[in-house]
Each structure stands twice: as C-alpha cells, then as structure tokens.
Image (cartoon, rainbow, N blue to C red; front, side, top):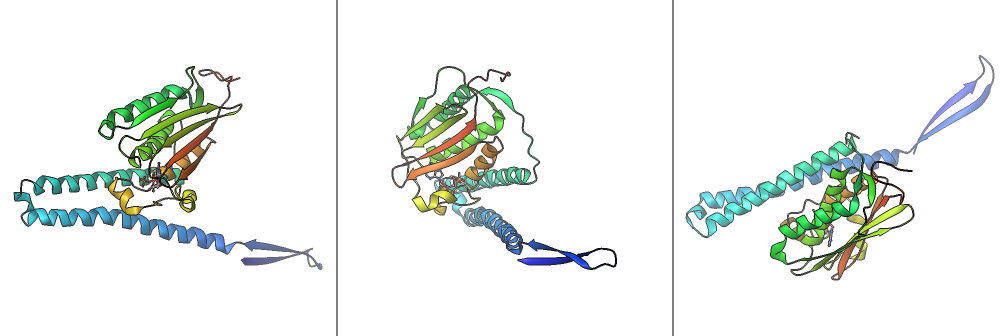
Length: 267
Ligand code: ADP
C-alpha cells in the first residue's frame, strides 16, 4: 500500500484538514505480473510449434523426404503446426481487440434455436469420422435473442468443438435450451474425459489447459474458453462449466432474454 498525504489549510490559516490517498500497489504489481506471464506464455506457445516444425523439416532434409511413407507424414505435421500457429495468432489478435475495447458489436434479434441447429449440423458434417451423436433439445418455436450473431457463433463453435475434441468416438453431445423468465440457458453436454474439480475454475484463464500435451495434440490454443467468456460477458451474459472427471462436461451459457421479444421489436 502506498500513501500520499495533503494538508488542507485556509490561506495562511491553521491546518484544518488532511487528505490521505491510499494506492493499492499490489494491484499494479498483479497487473504487471499478469502481463509478464502473458508475454511469456505467448512466446512459449509460438516457440513450441516452431521448434517442432524445425526438427521435422531437418529430418525431411536429412532424407526423410525420400521415404514415401515418412515424407508425407512429416510434411503433414509441419502443415498442422502451421495451422495451429495461425489459429493462435488469430485468437491473440481477437483478445487484443477485446482488451483495447476495440471490439465492434453488432446486435440484432436472432433466432437462437435456428443458430444452434445450423452450428450443430455443421459439426455433424465435419465430425462424421468420429461418429458423434448430436442430440438437440431446443424449443420448436423461434427464440429471438438480441445478440451479435457472429460473436455468439464463435462462442458456440468454441464450446462445441471442445465437446467434440474431448469426446470418445461414438460419444453423445447434447445441446439443450432452457427458457426462463428473463434469461435463456444454452447447455452443451458431452460424455468426454471431463475436468477435475480443482481445474474447473481455471479453464476460462488464458492458456490454461488441464492436460497441455493432449490439448496441444488436439490442436487447441488454450484460448477458446477465455474468448468465449469475454464474448458472452459483452452480451451481459455469463458462462460456467460443470464437469465430472472421466464422465463428461456441461458448459452453460446464460443470456438475457425476454419472452415477449419478437424479431426486431422488443416490448
Ligand atoms: P483448448 O484450445 O486447449 O481446448 P480452451 O480454452 O477451449 O482451450 O479450453 C481450456 C481447457 O479446458 C482445455 O485445454 C481442456 O483441458 C479443458 N476443456 C475445455 N472443454 C472441455 C470439455 N468439453 N471436456 C474436457 N475438457 C475440456
């Protein structure tokens, strides 16, 4: 704690007051420490794919390229690492926009049910190999919610892609919508690896992963849920996670909602 004192007195008169301003130095230190950790994390996250690529490229140069089995496999690794780096840099750019309040939001009345159906159909297409079953428990009637459609699409993309990533082959993913008086809940439940209880509050932190090696192999950047949280909060909503290790995970998003809202008109 840092203290500044100012004496208040009438012109040439006696002292008749004292102002004490207390600064919380620890908060400044925390911000500075978080900034340093963030830069260290970013450097580490970028260095890992680069060093991986360097060793695969060296091996290719040293003869692996001539081997018709190993050559294409090693090239594929460098391709995957490049793609992960692009994802990482895109995520970082987005976070930096959010940090500087540079994120432009375009709110419009959007049918949430239709949006969720579209997202789930897209994932059904791209995860055919994994044989994941998508169950939907979404009311049939339109559910108009005031949102930035692209941003909320990204939120659900991040959540559903985690559900897919951490699910076993043939696992079931359930997307459920629950409407309440002034809010709407969207819950995405999977039967995947789950998250130990003590790790659950940390999954929304930037770069936090329960199992770094596995998350990285699955192409994760460790930023997906941090971005989702910021985007949901810019909708005055909130996001939470409930999970049981080895059983499965539910991620819930709650958004403000009024039953009376219709497309473009709210009461
Ligand atoms: P990543 O890109 O690594 O998936 P996220 O920010 O999206 O990063 O998630 C952070 C971490 O939370 C993940 O690395 C993973 O350990 C854990 N996690 C997130 N969603 C799930 C899920 N559905 N099942 C199990 N673990 C999950």
